[in-house]
Image 1 (tube, rainbow, N blue to C red):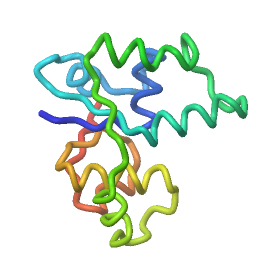
Image 2: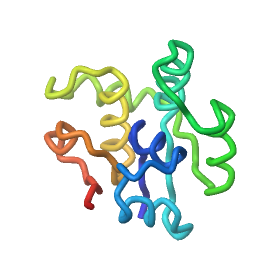
Image 3: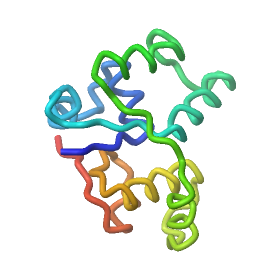
Amino acid sequence: MDLLLDTHALIWFINGDNQLPDKSVNLIRNLENKCFVSIATVWEIAIKLSLGKLDLNGGFDEISKIMRLYDFELLPITFEHIQKLLTLDFHHRDPFDRIIISQGLVEKLTVITKDENFPKYNLEIVWKN
């Protein structure tokens, strides 16, 4: 399965937060699944860290360590992702979430998210306790 982690899913995975359901943790840890992290997620985390609005175990460098350890692939923002963004309804107004939604749709990825607005975009979603 090809998975795209929403920002909170990556943060909770790194922090070992029990808000991330066991099913999601197991899918992420399963090396048979390919996990992607959007560059938008890394950007959002950097902003929140710089504003003092986020605690991340190990700090910003932990993102790179976890990505190497679990063989996550960094997903760049492409022209196609932006084209898709232009066609999205405004169920969601957060710009980081909108680009993650666009990337999930274009790349046909299953998104690990708790966000209730994501399913409104006909994305494949994983989030079960």
